[in-house]
Length: 539
Image (cartoon, rainbow, N blue to C red; front, side, top):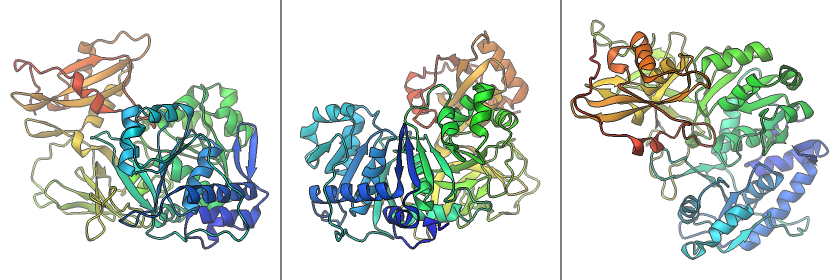
């Protein structure tokens, strides 16, 4: 069988055409009770592309084609709107349909989108601020289509031409549009395609339950289906079983998920899980840390491991995976994909680890107080590869440097085998009396207590030590754990300077759509620290 990925095609919309030619009668998408084959998908994408091309202005003064914003749930309408924009030579701007009015206004105004295809709710919200969006000239509830003659053509787009603006989650400020070219989107599939055994192939059926407006769902999910000419199972409502019924119904073979989905699968009825897993050969998880206990439990119940990966919107999105080494290692994010160069860089700019080589310690007798794990000291992840974005819209600021390297802002260490372990975001590092405290390490310690369902750790100002550690904790139902219990637990498991000096119990933590805790939403509630508060020393 011909793999659509083997056919020369400069962008993902061209891959649709390649799949239609190779096996047009095969299912491209399952959605609810509907099945769309590759020929039908290709025809619809062309009809949408023609309508969008007719409704959008010429490229702007900077040469950027018109932007098409798409605020839809996981559905065929999203898929044909996205691929139609790419086929028309336009720039797609996927938008979270759950955004509030200020969030929608920011993305639409910043991108200068001229067309919006959106849900009724989004269109109503946008109508209220239409006067503030002069560039927006057309709003649709469904992807527009027009009849297209067979000889119709569209601008050839590929390579460094801009394909997508994906707005970052805004955990550190207002969302910014990451500029991803056609070549960047395809490069990540080519990098993943060098892993053996293959992650996705043309015979696979892939679960598409992650939001398609997010880089992970958009390119690692939908993009992989299109790239390989495989079959996708669109799920717009996970339900209590996290899509297990749809997995079993369509005999999905590849599951692309996040930790909350894996946790839900672990808690599902044993018979339902067994039925769903009968056809599954590959389970991958990313976007947020997967607790080792959850990974172990799933592997035991489902009879297959979860492979963990790491990446960012700006890297389209995958950088590392445990699939590279072949065996998932507890707590690890794996090794760099083939074609991705990765360094761990210390605060002074020196390399701690690069291409599997640990830099020698200039002072082997110096006392190491990091106490994080064996292997290298933690350093910022800095990467280079064909899957890196071109910078942030509209002028490319914040992109890779002249040599092609880009600092992710994430901190990790490497063990002696070359497997990487994510520690934290660089901006979330807590300095207590000048000593580094990594919130994730404290969260892991808290999570080991049976009374803790979930936790988030922040640094808060302290007049004597600069910062101190505060924990926000969601109790396990039925476990009446107290702050004193948790402080004592931390004292038994962490160096004193890493221990929280305060614990606040909350009903729930704020999460992004892919499960990351939004710590910035916890900070405004942070009360000032009394300077008399005892702060653990570093001994």
